Image (tube, rainbow, N blue to C red):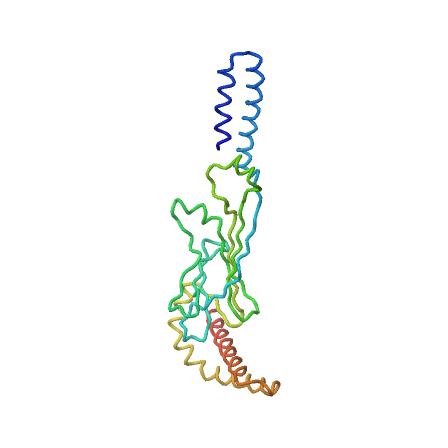
Length: 246
């Protein structure tokens, strides 16, 4: 910005204030050339980010927790797609294990100031064979290559310009169920019926799993047995919910 101002002043001064004709032409031509080069550089920076480079930041993976009530054996992610076939979702889950309520994440901001940033953000979910649900953010920015380019073309920009931000929620396929808001409401109404009808079958199925596991691992500790029982219960209930939602 400062260089452009200096060149603008020098341009007028060289053509209007230098009395000697030859000196005026030489200095005026040099300043005009520099001024044009500066303008071309600014336009290239604005249209093609000349003088900048991409920087990708991978944030640390963070564990997230079920949107369901803490007493529910089922682990739940509520995901509502924004638009049609956008693969961009508003998702509801708990950030911390002790949170009393789940909160909505990745809801686009619609104010005039924030809407351009919101269009650069995408959030979606996928399933895996992992034991825990996680969130991972990746951010991509335009940054200045060096101080020289920033000095030439900076017009009060921030140090970084967001290109794209991607948030990926990964949930275990066998112990988590992904529902939209309507399905979650439907499930809430049928939860007591589901629990009542499946409680006995779930108990029998889990007991059979534990018996089999003990035979295969006779030295397994009580702590390990308890953990397996809890996981099998989550698996059973999750499958029941998935079957119900078909």
